[in-house]
Amino acid sequence: MRFCSELVLGTAVLAAVAGASLIGEALPPQPGAPRAVSVVRSDAHTGRLVRSVVVKAKPADSDFSDTRVRTLVEEAAKNHDVSPLLVDSVIQVESNYNPYATSPKGAQGLMQLMPATARRFGVTNSFDAKQNIEGGVRYLRFLQDTFKDDRLAIAAYNAGEGAVTKYRDVPPYAETKSYVDKVGAKYSKAKRAAEVSSTPVKAADEPKPAEDDFRHLVQYLDSEGRLHLATR
Image (cartoon, rainbow, N blue to C red; front, side, top):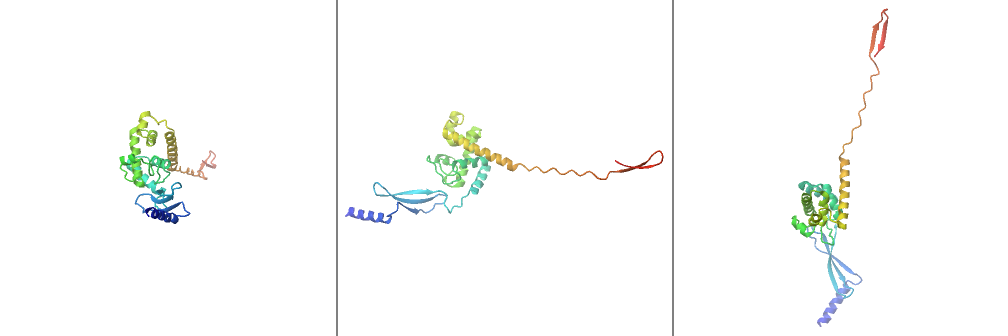
């Protein structure tokens, strides 16, 4: 009877999803967390239903925007004396402004903080844009103070302080070299654009006043008593 009951129950569940390979059910949203969707799939080999959770980046109803990111970047960069242009360049390369980005290695959020790094710099929720940027900027400030070189700081952000300390230069890793080049290129471009926009427009030379069309009139008498008029 138990076997029959399980069989009937399984058949009923499968019938409910007949013709479909997955069912999406939105989970209750959590503050500061990405929107999660519970997905039920039918295993092709066993026929059993398997439930998994899929995280959707940038939900449609989110108030997140690139403008908001730049505002948070400006605040954090000012507080920790880091160039906002550098922070923005790192974010572009790390996540392209996706606050819910997750790498295969486990890095999370806008500035792709590893869990250990996040804890180290006081971040409790890496998917919270403000916390993530604050932690990432604090980490960049630490790396700049440690290596006294933006290029090495960028390399350490990708490969870790130990690797940069070991090689005393950008580590010979293809990923890190590419990362340093990408961030460096964006940072240099942003600095050039900032310099151009901050350069005051030179005022056009003021026209010189036209010379007086009327010269001074001078009159004098010659030795014979004749009156002469002249200009000078």
